Amino acid sequence: MTPSGGWASYVRPPGIRWASPSCLSIIEREGNPGYVVLGWPDALRNLPMTSSARLLLVVLFALPAHFVSAAMTLQLYAPEKHDRFYTPAEPSDPEKAFIGDPYDWSGVGVRHYGWYEWATMISPQYFLSADHFHPSDGSRVRFYHTNDGDGSYEEHYVESGVQIGDTDLWLGKLETPVSSNVAYYPILSLPRNPLYNNIELFTFGKADSTDAMNNTRVGRNEIDPNMYFETEVEKPTGGYSTGFTYYFDFDDSGGMEDDESYLQRHDSGAPSFVIYNGLPALTGIHWFIWEDDEDPSIVGSADSFVRPYVDEINAAMASEQLMLLSNTTKLIWDGLGDSNWNSPQHWAGGEAGEIPHLATKVAIGTDAVTVTVDAMAESLSVKDGGALEIGSTAALWLDGNLDFANAAELVFDLHGNTAGSVRAAGNVRLGTGSILTLRIDGTSPFLAGTHTLIDAQGVTGISGTFTTTSDLGIYALSGGPAYDAGKLTLDILHDLLQADANLDGSTDVRDFNAWNTAKFTNGTDWATGDFNNDGTTDVRDFNVWNTAKFTSIDLDAATSGIHETGFSSGFDDPSSSSIMDPSGDSRPTDPSSFVTTQVPEPGTLVLLLLGGLLGLGWRLQQAARRS
Image (tube, rainbow, N blue to C red; front, side, top):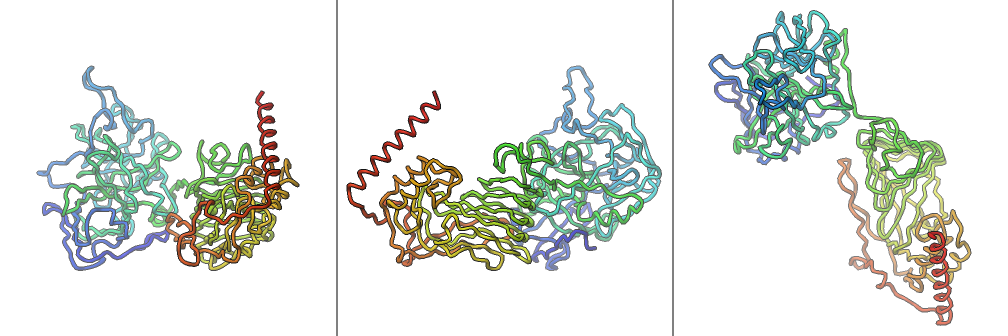
């Protein structure tokens, strides 16, 4: 069957053999690409094996009576921590410290005195289990209201059930709905597989208690990064099941430490949960375990992945529907306090302390927000009058689209040989009158080169254009930004000296005059002496000029650099610009390597004297404020 949600499938390389022991159901097919494993993305290389390696799959179904049923394995098992219904038998026994507290597990039931077949409620009357191992029609399922095995419970008969397509998911229906004392669980529904990477799971399995009903063990694990496959496995009763899975390996040390779990027989049909907003959300139903046949020390477990089959499950439920829980939240900037993107107190709409991440939709109103270190979001909209500033060493990564309303402003800071950037896997839409501003931090020379300010990987790329501003003078160096195939680039044609206010290639008296005219005023820019980009022309900017005074470059010899490496939608780290001179050698970044010229000595003395007086005056002013 084709699962819902656009989940892609791949074809595995030949030479992979999946098998189970002779005492179980056997699959041993070679040289038939796509027969056993229908999904095999490159991420399988996370496992230390070659394309000719073999994995062993063991389906976790009920064995004949002469086989012993094993309990779920944990790295360091402690009954008081891991057994849901643990009760100290002696006064000297440890007190209960169950890792599943304080969550509500009342919706995880088992068949009444049966083979410990599992039922996890997803609505008042429907539950999920494994197609190859589930409570049969007419059987009873018990649900304990608490984690106390001596406490209250209720039982319900199974009316019917159905396999979900060709998967190992089985949807069961109870004859009567559960009471309000029994929970039913939402499905964790994230928009893309990688968002499940390393999510912490609570995994249920069978314990080794002699009590046939109070026999539940809980461990923890993490979904292995990018280990999502469409797998075909032979069923114990014959035939095959095919479905999407995720994997979680078993670490002898590390991992989730004592709680690290590895499934065993009779764990099929039990659930895995993630805790979100303090509540359990269902991710998968246990299906099989696996090991690397060339290195048996590499072992792990696999669940039927519920998210890809939401539509199919809803269709089969008919009268009831799944609850979906997504951590794709929407955060709105509150406009209070500073402008730092990474200040959690400024984001409203999510959990306490939450800042945007790849599953967050972000909205900025009429405020200014500054990104000073790499940041990310699912998507971003900036309203009319709002502003987003990207620091010179920062990148904003978006998994979706960027939308700028009319008169919204996007600001890029430029410093040294770096510029801020926006990298979007979707499209960038610019409203009429949206503004692009470039701010130069001239505390070090800004070097020639090509800077990719925006890279939009969506189908339409960048739609609309900015109404650019030239108050900072940077366009004299570049001729303005260029739009090309989803990219907005800026070619800096020659180096920009520190404090070269008029961009004539020399830091000299003319630039001092620009500073002097605007000194001690706010709202200034590069051309009016704000060389450190703090919005004020003051002594700090004079100090920048004083450090760089009387340096110059040959504008005719200076040329543009080469382009950055292109950005891929896989969210690779952005490459740095490579700044080259015409001969192919790297351009030196040490200001002392620039050609210097001197103006007449008397002018030098006057300016240095003035600089000393200004510096002294500024220090006295600061001392007076502190006193």
